[in-house]
Image (cartoon, rainbow, N blue to C red):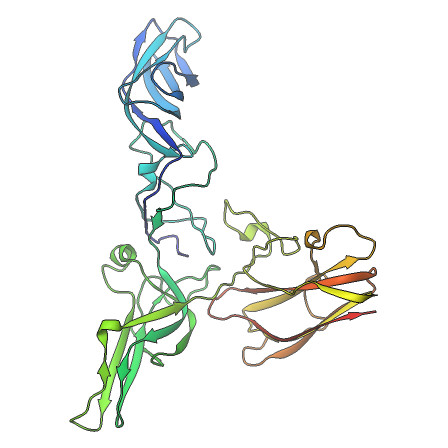
Length: 410
């Protein structure tokens, strides 16, 4: 989902800790506590460990007691004790009201919920913020640690995003009859924010498509999840296929098998990442020059080419289909004869500093054009590999590569 107003329901998440303290009773105090705020106070007693509290004292009485660390292994019948929490003579006992499972310190029941917004959206990720209002956690409480988990049965509802549609509608159209098909789709942002129309507003104009064949669209669309259709589209349907049946003979009609009706939604994977500022919060940026990985998801890497005779230059020629909203960058790496670093651990280098061709070639949304990339006067090398990185802002418009030729120059 690539819209911050999207809704999602998460279910089936399991925790990594059991018996965490989630709510507590009003503390019972002995002695006269000193006014002030006391944080991270360790507790004793009960069957668990690790629970700490924050206590605020005003007018010599506890005005606030909240949980700063939920701990583990507690029972709902436990009583916790804090001793000399004000560095004086005041003690307090606190009854545990409720316990539960947590994941990274966050209550699992707060994660298994419906969320009406998402943030920090990446091509494969989004972030939700669980509500902690139902728990006696301190103000500004955060996860105790970064963790991967949730179990094997965790689910999250999502929209079905597509750039190309392929209907699967079994039919019979005898001679003298035909079936025409149209579709109404709901626009959605691409990962880079490109959209045609209004998000979660189904188009009012039908588009002709080819029945049971690929139909390409100029911008991405979605089949929205039930919760997004309910909350964002007033319960309306986000996808509609219309079929019109024709016949020149009143005794013969085309036939459609509605019991097996369906369609395939095909999404292209492309984004446009050039720096750490282009990735969402919480996602690691991997530069295209790194030996392993790339924040750009459209990449192609040739196999390692070993040379019988060492070379000192590279020339790459390819036919690129490069519409105006896209780009293709070409990189290389070479194994120098005097270097002991394993080939897979070597970083990539851009042709012409930026991955651009030797000469400027205008983008063209209709035709393939030949591009040439050259790296001369390199240190002598015995092996090389080529990497191509595709970028774009609209997943429905993607670059393509054909007739790739790589030559090592002695």
